[in-house]
Structure formats: C-alpha cells, structure tokens
Length: 460
Image (cartoon, rainbow, N blue to C red; front, side, top):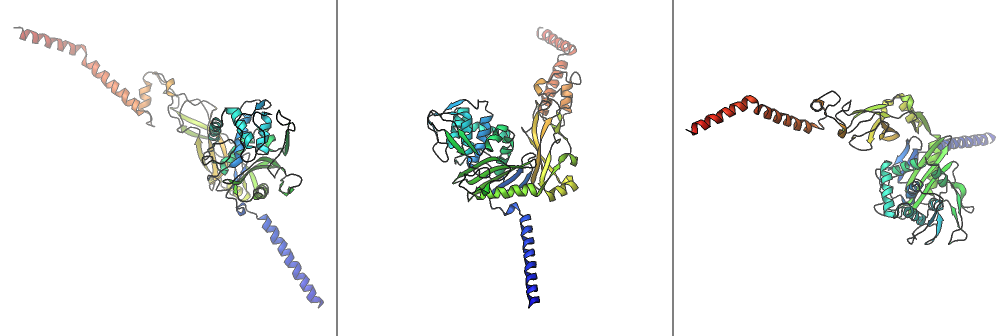
C-alpha cells in the first residue's frame, strides 16, 4: 500500500513538472500571430525595422490616432505655444470632447493637451483653425506632411479623425508618422503625460482636469491598473463605430524604443493587453544588429535628367547612403541568418521626385533606400547627393570640353533623353551648309553671267 502511494505521488509530481515545463515553454513561445487584431505592426522606433506586421499596408480608418499628425503640425507651426487662443463660433460637439464653449480663451498648449489626453475633437478643430484658418486648409497641410514622410496610403480630411470615407491610413503609415513625431521632445512630453490641469479660463473658473485615455500610461484610481505598462512613452488611442478600437503605443526598455499600432479591435481593452504582449515579445525575443558590420555598399549611381551640358559627368551622380548609425532589430533567428549571409537583404530605392531631375545640390536628401528581408522592412536610410548637378539652363555653347561641345555631347548621349536637340542642331547645320555653298562667289558669278546672256539674246 505504501509503495502504491509513493508511486502515485511520484506520478503526480512528474505530471506536475511536465505541466509546468509545458506552460513555461508555451509562454516563452508566444507569437504575435496569436493576436486577432486585423491590422498590426511592431516597429523599432530608431531604425524603422519591422519586427512584426499583419495587413499593415491595407487601408483602415485611424479614428483619433489622426491627432498624432495634428499635434506634430501644431508643434511645428511656429505658433507661440503659450499664446491665448480665442475659440471661434464653430465648435465640434461630436465624440470625445475637452468641453469648452464658443469664444472661450484657452492657451494653445492647453488645447494640444486637451486633444492628446482626453482626445478632444473640439480641441483638434480649434487647433486646425488657429494654425491654418480653416480645417480644410489644415487638411491640405496634413496631406503634404504625410507625403513628405512617405505615408503613401494615407489621406486626411479631418483634424480630429471623426469618420469620413476619404479619411484613411494604414498601420504602417501611422507607425512612420509616430516614428517621426517621437523625435520631437515636446511631443514626447505631451503624449507620455498621465494627467494635466488646465488653468481657469474666461468661461470656466475651475479650468479642466485631463486624464490620458491610454491605459498603458494611466487608469483612474477606481479602474483596473493591470493595463499599465512600465516604460510606456505614448502615444494615442482612437475609437469610432467604423474604425472600431485603435491604438498607437510606444514603449522603451534598455535604450530600445518600440512602436505598436493596432487597428480595428472589437473589444476596448484587448488593444491594451495585446500591446503589452507585443512589447514583451519585442524586447525579449528580438536582437539588434549594427548595419556597419554587414559591409553593405554605401553608394549607388544614378542618372539625373535635365542636367547641364557642362556637367562633368554628363548627369551621372554618385548617391551617398548614410549607414553610419543604422541598426536592424528583429527576431533572433532572422538576425542569425542575416549575419551568415548579408546578401539575403534586398533594397528598394524611393526617390523624393521621380524621375530624378536637375538641379540637385550637394548634401541634399533626394530619397530613401529601404532594406528588406523576406518581404519585411529591416531599416531605411537617407540618400544624399555627393555633388551639385545644375540644370540645362546653366549650359553654355562652349561646354566643358571646348567650342562645339554641345553637339559632341548630344551625339555621345547614351541615354537618348535629349536626342531631339541633336537632330534639330543637325538640321540647322545642313541648312547652313546648303546656304553657304549655294551662295558661294563661284555660283554667284555663274548666275550673273547667265542672266546677262539671256538679256543680250532677248534684246536683239
């Protein structure tokens, strides 16, 4: 009986150890693919490396995460952040609000906090009107900035993100925007703030107490605090019936900062718990690799159109790739494969303007180069011109190689981009030759003699 009991206890202990081991392994083997959010991305904020993505380039409605763009444009507008703004007659009353009224006088910085912490749609609209005069003009500014940042699948209509069919973005584009915005220290301070007190105004003697809607940063004392995440640095929540639950979040650990974007969640709190899991996985199961150790080429050659005839290299430009501080952060298995065979990395050039056209100036950023592995972006780097390439209006007839060099250069132009000039010049040259030989002294004398002979004949 005693032996049976010992066997039973031993069996239970073995099963318990196996169960615990399996549980630990299951936890350690967490995969971002287990998260059901339709649109997701996890990006390294420094390098732009994508650690994980799912439908990240597909169109989605960003809701109030739009306010990230409104915030950075407000901060870059050149307006005094502490000037008093008098709210106009047109005050937004839909969705989440800061709660001010018409003609209320509020400091510009307080409107920005009201927009980013409590997601005030009224504050976003007031900011847009203060910066650009009208919301439609501000939307133009938003789209110009989006284009400059490479947000290729984004179009903004409203400063606050309230639903509009033509107001859309992608998880990837919003990660790009956030990566840019986090470089602004004032932006970082605002989006990482838990609570903020607005001073009394001419219409409200108490002012406004603002609480951040991002539960990774703040939950009210009576709420569940389990969603808070140590090291969270921002950024913004969003929610509309069409966009569902959205979150753009950032967190930092041991000098590494990650950006998570989750769009179209069904449940309110699922986005926060998912972001926590993504951050844990990103910090613990990924690795950083310095690009300088891979011996990638630091230059590329590109033909510039419309270059001056005098250009010393006929418009051929050496483009510098800034890889000095570039890093790759991704899962450890991918890092190991890249270390073993760097040729697995592929690159795609994205010029600021296509085709690349003169004038271009030395040191000017003329595009970016995107490095990918197995279809996933590892990092991007700026492309800069190594020298100045002037345009065709700066050409002279003498050219860099002496008189008549224009014709010689066009004849030897292998690109064929300006071959029509050669044919025009050749035709003019032929006409000049015909005229020259047609009016030579010998022919003039012969014509004169014939004319005189004819006159003498008919005058008889």
